[in-house]
Amino acid sequence: MEHIAVYPGSFDPITYGHLDIIRRASSLFDKVIIAVLINESKTPLFSIDERVKMLEEVVKDIPNTEVMAFKGLTVDFVKSVGAQVMVRGLRAVSDFEYELQMSHTNKTLAPELDTVFFTTNLEYGYVSSSLIKEIAKLGGDISKMVPPYIEEKVKEKFK
Image (tube, rainbow, N blue to C red; front, side, top):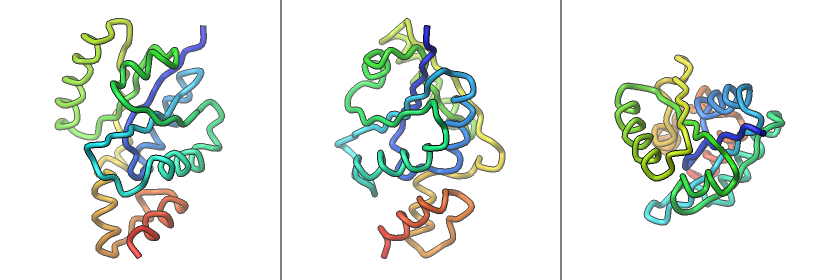
C-alpha cells in the first residue's frame, strides 16, 4: 500500500518554512500531495493557478511530490486522493492550539485519517506568508524567507 500524505494550505506565497516541511514529509511518505486551497472568502495575492505553478517550480527537485488545487473540506480532498494522513506545520504554541482543534475536528469528520505535525526548523520559526507579503509591500528584503523564484514573483506583484 502506498503511503500518501496531503499537505494543505493557501501557500500565498510558499516559504522556506513550507519547503522544509515538504522535504521532511517527502522522506517519510511515498507521496506528498501539496494541496492548494481555493478559498473564495479570502483575496489572495496570487491566483490559484499562479500558486500551483509557483509550487510546482519550487518542488520540482522533490520527486515524490505533486501539487493540486482543491476546494471544499480538506478531509474530503484527502480521502479523494487516497491519502491516509494530513501534514501540518507548527511554528509556535499559538499554532498548536489552532492545529489541535482542527485535527480533532478532522478526526470527527473522517476518523480514518490522521494528522502528522512537523515542528518548524528554528531557522524559519518566524516566517509566515502574511509577514512576507507585508515586508515585500514595504520594499523590504524577503530573500532569506523564500526561494529566489518566489521572491521575484512577489516583487512583481508589488511593482
